[in-house]
Image (cartoon, rainbow, N blue to C red; front, side, top):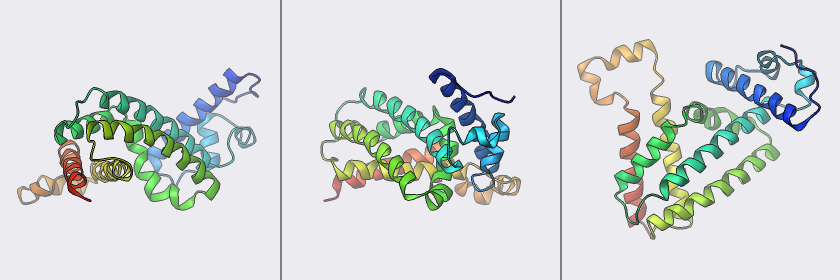
Length: 216
């Protein structure tokens, strides 16, 4: 499909959504480094020149896709946190985090790319805009966290989010295994090393919370 030039905001949003979907498919299947701006245009049914009416680079496209998914997750997670009582068990908080992440599989698939590829290649201006948005969204979550755990506030609350986010990325990445690795984990001697996303991440977040609660 070749898109004609959009003449209304609704049509422009429709075009952007088509680009987002095409980009997500390519990033998930091929990895960030193997996807080009032109490949996204082809997948979305655009000419390269038409694509430039909406985005200037694949970095900008990725950040917009990721920011949209991230904002959805923050809204969902914040709603779930508001159901938790003060000083709730760390495992309950961790379970809430894990369940909220599992409800956003597209976000999980893109999280490793943000760390391993994008932040090394994007311009200062692109990263500044994205980080400011992320900080604004995360600030709201820090308030939710401090309500639940009064001794985890300010920088500590941000630290809880950052460490939990890193643990999520590592645990999710570990679920992507080659056939050889899957075969290896079937052997009894390596069962203790076999990744379990939900169990591993829940344990990691419990440890993070407990550590922050006793740290100065």
